[in-house]
Length: 111
Length: 109
Image: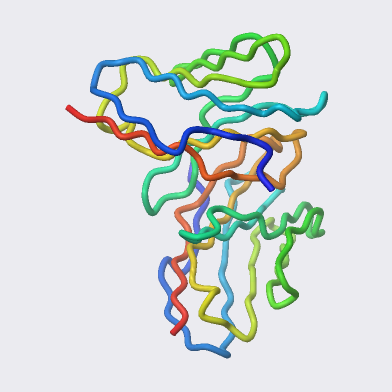
């Protein structure tokens, strides 16, 4: 069974630009969650989608947004990038809420 | 804000049993205790989850006392490949996992 895939794996952007990250969940998983991981703040929950609806949201500014498609694939978008947005962005899918399967992440560098 | 407290780091040698204790004094009745493992530059991996007493799977055991204010993850006979960060989470079976700082386990030969 294929795991969670994320594209791209690495990305370099300039301050002020926007970026879109993609996540394909494990087949049959309808919940997709996004997390940001930085050395300073650790792993932080961004938001969760289930059946194309945002079901839960973390404490991040409105520049961070996401969506989920009918095939459960999800995208997250960050607009007006700031240096502090440099991080590893992780996507996780689940069938049972507490058992989330994480992808390899997208390493975003903002210069 | 993480609801758990764990040691920042632990050291062990190959072949030893490692016990990582997590404190969660304010655990709610509906909370489950879940442990994840994370290797550098990878996403966390689910290890084990429990509500009370003892749970065992092919990777680890989880011991939870009756008051549920703490839990202990037990890794039998660790190897170098068990070097990772281990996170203890309490969660109401929801999907917004709250990760703390975790415990960095270093296994030496």
